[in-house]
Image 1: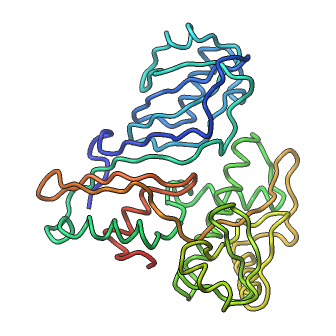
Image 2: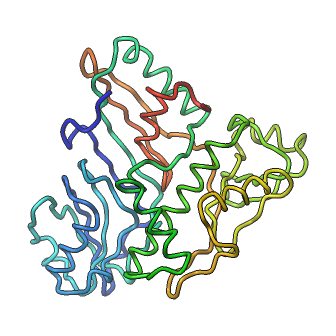
Length: 325
């Protein structure tokens, strides 16, 4: 199986949470980038606008080896000037003013079109049915390996910061700590014995309609809801304020935190929030389709919620097998 033979084989389109208002001191620029990280584009925009790079906002990081379209915000940069920007690896598609900086997480999700090559004839033949099963039953909401960096250095750096190491740049520190939280979540998902369509008393459940969470007490009452995909198990992103699991699930989570070297209690470094959160164990791809493009290749199109990984979907389709694995 091969991904990204060319950047055009991996196309991602950000789905914004809101549209720029057309007024304000920040200019929202919609860019198309190739073989550039979001941070590289942000630094280039900061340089061209003569502002600190920390003042450039974006809702989320997009893959480097891809064609990615996303919004960034730049203060004090006029629309006309923004539309004239030309730089290596990206171009400005659209520019509109808005009243505040674009914040991390301000997106509805991402839309993907991915060509997967190097497949066997049976994998090509079964891809559409497997994708339909994921759209119905959900896929594991694992963090992709790109979250962790080479040799998982991002998570190691986050652990160092939380245990008293130098914080350094605030944005970089937030990302490193987030990578550590992601590693803990993936560890929780790996160790969880039940199928993702089942709950255990004492663990935390995620309500898909609202994003709220609660501790499961009555399994008989919650079983129809998890079967209907109204709720799902919710794994930990540890922090200073985390809804704790109880009973055996709580004991396993505390052991997992210790295994990952988390201090107890967690204290946020100066200037960095580490509030903690819960993340659903499974998500459903939306508007999913699969078409053959060659004897050994298919094109997958689908949308995922914020923070969910297209590479995980591909791995689930062609490595892990059916949904709920």
